[in-house]
Structure formats: C-alpha cells, structure tokens
Image 1 (spheres, rainbow, N blue to C red):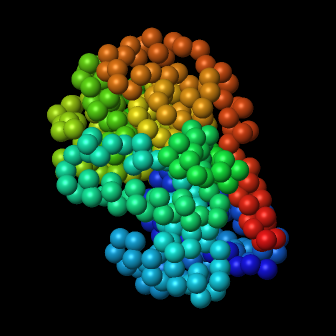
Image 2 (image 1 turned 180 degrees about the horizontal axis):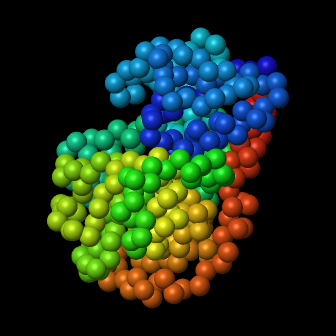
Length: 358
C-alpha cells in the first residue's frame, strides 16, 4: 500500500479564502470516505486552525520557513524519505522534485502577457511562476482542476499533456450548512440591519476588478456598497483607484462565516465583477443564502453558474443595476446538487485509489 501525503501548509491560516476553503473542505469530505488508504496531512510544527480529522493522520514536520521554504525542504524531504505520493491541492503547494496529484485552480500567469505587467517585482514574479508551473505540470502524475475552462487553458498552454490526465474536481458550497447564523454579533452590524446595500466578498488582486465597483459606485452615489475581504490600503490597490474617496463604499475587512451569512442574506444583490477566475466560489455561497447575484460574464463563470445568475460585462462601468436586477434567472437548486464537497472528494478519492493500485 502506498503512502499519500497532503500538503496542509495553507490550512494554518485563520482566514480561509477560495483556495484555502477548497483545500479545507475537500480534506474534511475525503476523511469521511477513505477506507484503508494510508493518507497523512503534513503541516509545519506548531500549526493552528487545522481541521478535525478521524482517518487522515495529521503530522507536524519541520519548522515554517519564509515564502515556499518549508515545502521545498521539509515537505519535499518527507516525501522522498517515505517514498510517498504528494497530494498538493494547489499548484503553489507542490514540491519541485516529485509532484504527485496537483490541483491547478487557474492559469492567470499563463494567460497574462509579460508586457502587460507593471513593475520589475511583478515581472520577476510572473517569470518565476511560469517556470514553476511549467515544471509542476510536466512532472505531475495527475492534475485536477476546478472547471472545464481551466482544463482547456491547461491543454492550450501545455499541449503535450493528455486530456485523460486532467480531472475536473469542482469547488462546492455544502459547507454553508455548518454556518450558525445565531452566532452573529448583531451589535457590530446593527447599523446595516435596515439598510439597503450591494455586497462584494473576495480578494483585492487586479483580476478581482475592484475598479468596476469603484466606477459603478461613483455613478450610484445614493446606493451603499459594502466590500469584505483583505485589508485595503493604497499600497495594495491596483490602477491607482482611490476607493477611500467614496463615502458610499465601506470596507468591512475579514468576516467570519457567520458574519458573511448576515450580509449575503440582507444584501440587495451580491456583486462579482471578476475578470478572471478558475471557479469563483463567492457567488455560489451567495446563492446559498438566497441572494441575487450580478456576475461577470468572463472566464469560467458562465460555465459554473449557467443560467442561475445575471451576467454583465466587467469592463462596462455604465451598467444599469436596476435593469440587471429585473432579469429572471433559473432556480439555483441544480447548482447546489451538483457542487457538493462529497461529490468532489469522491472524484479525488477515485484518483487516489487508482494510483494506489499501480
């Protein structure tokens, strides 16, 4: 029987965004499926915020290092020492020498052009990631990805890879069932209880397109726009937009799952203007709470959300929000049945069992 090891480094973070959420939830679902396979979750020593597992063994090994030092040293050494098969549920977690089952969530770097990237630091990061991704894709035993869109982009950029070697393992929203809405600190958000607002939850990277929210909010000065996610400051905003000058845009910072449920449930609509996604989880979470979703028509999003959301052009800042809200959409129940962590874990488990028999 072969030993499988999962790189759990990102699970030590308290705030779990899209990729971290994917890794955390799929491991929890996988833990309930495995029968006799030898699977370990490897994390640096003194790790916090880890999932509670019954069958997958959690092993602390090596001390945390800056950047990717831990996975290129301690984690890599553990794989070689135990002749184990690596499971890296994000390409950025994969070891250089012996990547095994690797998840690629998107190909933003491959789909970008070097000439379009500003700043020497960003250009060097782009080149570094292109080299690393090329090495990982070429050496991986199996590749999983989160949408057919990303699968097709992988085949486009790496045409020597067989389509049979790539399996789509979608993200999901069934973790929503665990959220306790009664745990919300109502005093903290009492001021929004009776207010009408648009809501955005996500990152602040350039592809997330906060510029669209900024420009739309400038036109709709009587509307309130709430933005949740990583801290905003002038150093990490792109395209020199000054979102702070708008009185009708409020940044809430990081929110707990319970707090997020409050804003999803209360918002006039959830806005998702992203230009590029591999899956794009927040709109699915918003739909789970009954929110209307106005979503970019870019990249994978029409594939993922089908006819259950209202689409707009993310480069069009002159959208008519009221008109968009009147559009009729399909019942999202079919998405909830399709995108479950159990379904995704079953597909991953299938790959593990196949490799265990080799």
